[in-house]
Image 1 (tube, rainbow, N blue to C red):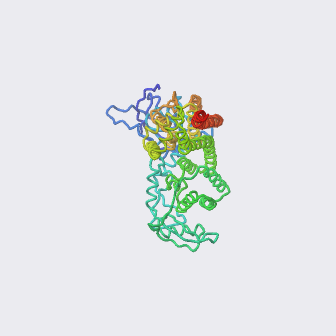
Image 2: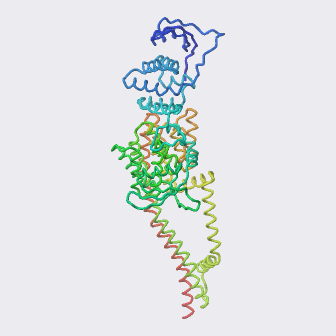
Image 3: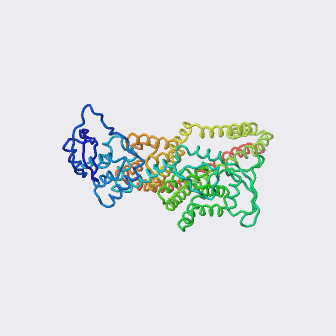
Length: 604
């Protein structure tokens, strides 16, 4: 990038409010500095070079992020009113306090003919890279105001973190209750989610309760709360009467097999919650309705815990975060974004559609695999039965008649003898192999990556895995971008939720490249796990500023390709499995029948 040679000048002038100002400015010449100050509306301008013995001002000081939401709001409003970029930036400078000089320098470069992105880059490291990237995307797509809206939400939330507010009173107001973080923006879902959930759980105590529900039925259950009074008040709010609460005893057993919300259920629940909110029902009551109407024990427990935290004054995303891995990380992040923008119902609708698509994709894969797995298990069962029960009986028959056993029969007999005499060892070895494989897959990243890479290179099955991964990646990426989540944050979220190490490395590589100022598409160029069509659509999205839209189109394309390939897989696997079973049974029957001809000849 070509840069003008700039010099530091000090000046005395009267600003637009009639106040005298003694300050510094960067310009290409003394006349240039005077002219620009005059354009800004300054009067009685006196400009002089900075002396060699005078201390230089710090012109590389980073922008005050706490003021950025106000700065970008003014800029966005002016641009929407069709003001020129230069006039809009000057207006920001006039209304700014900490960032006044920075926006004046931006205005100078724009006055000289540079774009806003280039002007920010010429200031050095004054603006964070994520801001420059967002502005760049806005300028490329011709919709800079929408990208400024993302920055306003981002830095409005950031500013909120540094301010301490009094905790809003919820249903409960206990003096011993610690003050919570004042907003969801104060929680880093990327790095501290497990710690936050663990810290929250450490404050809770398990209680056992007996009560009468709204239908007049006596009920016994368990609930974690901060105190007995806390638990009793929550149960009372939930419609219970005749409540008795006591600490949970060590011998009280509560069996929980899996506490994760089922994706098949969550889509419907999100749609219901969105409908309630659109109907004007308060969030706490809406979630309470969900907890009472669901028949799924896991969902009912999870929603009850959400109600408890919401009544305490927590936000929905914070309440979800407190439950650890019960709710998907993506959903928590999207709801966090929605709470910042105040558009929760539309995000819930989008996420309901997203999880519906994901559930259907998984269902189609399970449907494709059910038949071959059933046939394979059946074939193994038939094989074991014939080798253990049927073949030994015929061996006795052959030996008593002195029949000569052909090679195929002798082979089957040997396998039968081995299986009968060593079945305990065989079962033990198989179980050990499965346990070691599962343990290595869960705990060893390199082993997991090796297995996934091998599977992705298998004929037929490999493309099936790749299409599914590309669909999940692009669908999630599009959802994040379309709801105003920063690209860097989106990549962090994608890295956290993907289970495929190959794509996790690609995403991590992208984050490193973004930090270096490179494009997203550079990370996916010539990567075998990312199809060429998807790569070119990614490039197109970057160049046009419509990355979210392009990712939606890519996800739809690979969703259809995945479905088509699943259908092909189902149609191909059925005859293959039939031939396999027929072959196994045929070989064993042939080995049994062949010696009978020798017995028949001896009788004749």
